[in-house]
Length: 68
Image 1 (tube, one colour):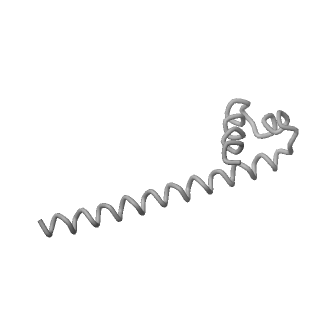
Image 2: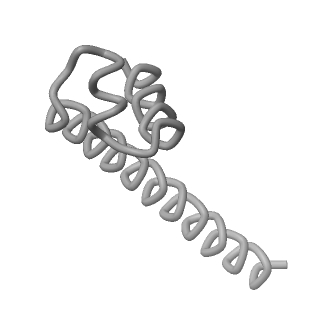
Image 3: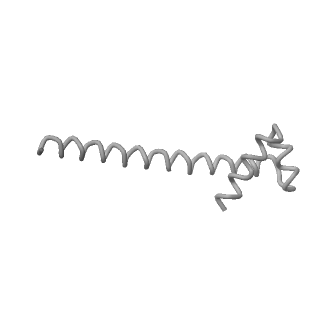
C-alpha cells in the first residue's frame, strides 16, 4: 500500500498535476490528493521517530561520556 502511495506521488510530479495523475489511475483528483496526504503523514511520523531516536542516542552518549 505504501508503494502505491509513493507511485502516486511520483506520477503527480511526472505528470505535473494531480488531475493528470488521477486520470492515469481512473481515480478522482481528491482520491489522489488524499493518498498523497496520507503518505506525507507517514513520512512526517517516520521523520519524528528518527529524530526521537537520534535525541535519545545523543542523551545516552552524553551520559556515557560523563561516566568515562
